[in-house]
Amino acid sequence: MNAQTQVEGYTTADGRKIGGVLMEMKNITLRFGGVKAITDISFDIREGEIRSIIGPNGAGKSSMLNVISGFYVPQEGEVWFKGQRRAPMRPYEVARQGIARTFQNIALFDGMSVLDNIMTGRLTLMQTGLFQQALWWGRAQREETEHREKVEKIIDFLEIQAIRKTPVGRLPYGLKKRVELARALAAEPNILLLDEPMAGMNVEEKEDMCRFVLDVNDEFGTTIVLIEHDMGVVMDLSDRVVVMDYGKKIGDGAPDEIRNNQDVIDAYLGVSHD
Image (cartoon, rainbow, N blue to C red; front, side, top):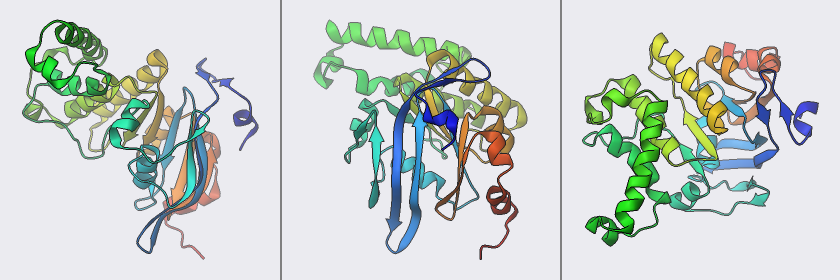
C-alpha cells in the first residue's frame, strides 16, 4: 500500500476529495468445485474514489465484483464494509446497504418504458406495501410522486428526456447502457459497481459514458468500482487500479504505477508463467 492510501483521506490532483476506507477485501479466496477463481486477494475501496479492477479474460474480475456485491460468498477471507465484517446477505439486503450495479449483459425490462425501468431502482426505498401501492391512494400516491421526481432528475442528469416514455426494447445498445446506469443511480448507492459499462460501444458512446461516470462521481460523490477492458478508459477515469491475472492480484496502485508494472505488462502481452 502506498503512502497516499495510508492516510485517512486525500485530495486528488483535480481537487476531488477521497475519504477513508469504505470497503475492504481481506484475503479473499473463491472456489467453484476444485477451481480457484480468486486466490488470497486483498485490497480496499475508499470513499469517493473511482477504483478499477482490470485483467485479461478469465482473470477473475467478474467473480470479484460478485463478491463485492454480496452475490458470491468467499470460502476464505472477509469482506469489511464501513468498519464492520459483512455477513452473508440476500440481494435486497445488499441493496439496502447502498450497493448497486450494472451488468456486463444488459438486464432491463424490454417491454417497459425507460421511466418505469428506472423506477424499479427505487423499490428498496419505498415504504408503503403492495396493497397500498395497488390502491394508489394517500401515502402511497404521495410516495410514488416523490420517487418519480427523483427519477426525473436522474433522467435529466443523463440526458435521456427524449426517450423517457420509449419501451427499452426499442432502444439502441448505447442508450440501453445509459438506462441501466440510471436505474442503478435511482437506488442512491454508496458504492456503484459497473461491469464493463463501455463494452460494445462505439467511440462517441464511450466518450458519453466516460463523461457520465465522472459526473456521477463528482456531483453525487458516489464511490465507483469499475471493470473495463479499454485501458485508455481505465487510465483516464481511475484513481487507483487493482490488476488480476489467473485469480491472483499482480498489481495495485495509481494508473501511472500500473502502466509501469512489469507483471501487468507481461500479463497483457501474454508472457508465459513459470
